[in-house]
Image (cartoon, rainbow, N blue to C red; front, side):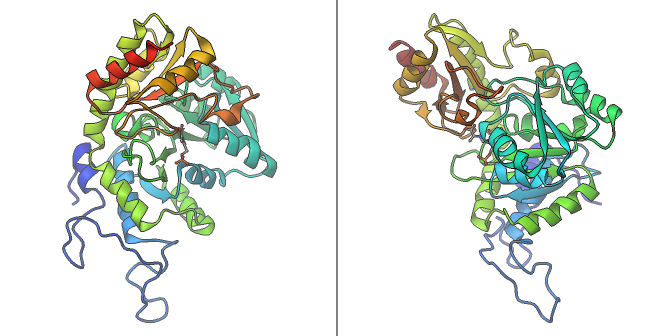
Length: 388
Ligand code: P1T
């Protein structure tokens, strides 16, 4: 019988037994596109690296263990070349004429894929405030096939009650699938499959990889039949990560628990500091009791994460000035790395939602709080805010 380990142990060991050929403790980078066959069709389990690769497989098994709601009934993992590649592959389960109901605050690239690409293939999309399960239930249509939840959302940090939404959606029709983009929380903080979701999607580029050195994505799947369909699509479409990228992601994952503890502690301190700053109009952080999703976040998340957004009294000009004045917080897109980043979503990560119902406030600044010394981070924000 396979031994059941805790989450922190799975981060380091799941899918990564010492290499059977050499004893290498760390999973090797199997930098090969193809595999010798002893006779036609007689392989050691691998025939071509788009279909499968041992380094990628280790990552997929590790991701599955991290998102498994119950280790006696493990989930299934698939790795992709980016978060958007994972989302695109998952959306191939949806046929022309069918409807996808999505969160009205999502990563700008997700919106762009839905609205500017997949809509042209006959898939219908509508967007709803996922903080209210009643609104979600009311927006379901006879042709709805997928509910797409991002929580916490990017960049407004809205919180969805995954358990309540999944229950309501499945009561409406067990045929409707529920997918959760768990990128902002990471599996250390929140495990949607145990709350009723069918799929978890990650941009592993973010907290899972954790070091801003690799782009990747993943789908983790509760049900075997869905896994088999998606495994077929993964190979048929081919948006897979290479062995180097898979290895870097595995390497990053090992410290996820430690990093998320520090990200969350630092973000809570930054939130506390910003709330009291005279230049700040509003701080959006699920760990603050004033956040409308605080209680749901407390129920579903172990900690409140490293992402926060802030609206400045000086509006858009102040936002631009602030992000250009920080010295330790680097002005850059992306998030979830060990280093702190700062950006203006309306001008950068979410430029593609401009003019749509998902438009984000022009004066919103998003912070990805890293794991540096908290005093240095606050001092940097203090000197930057003083320039406004
Ligand atoms: O960048 P990529 O690995 O393709 O992941 C896309 C993606 C999916 N889901 C969420 C919640 C995301 O935040 C992202 C990527 N986001 C950024 C690059 C960003 O700066 O917000």
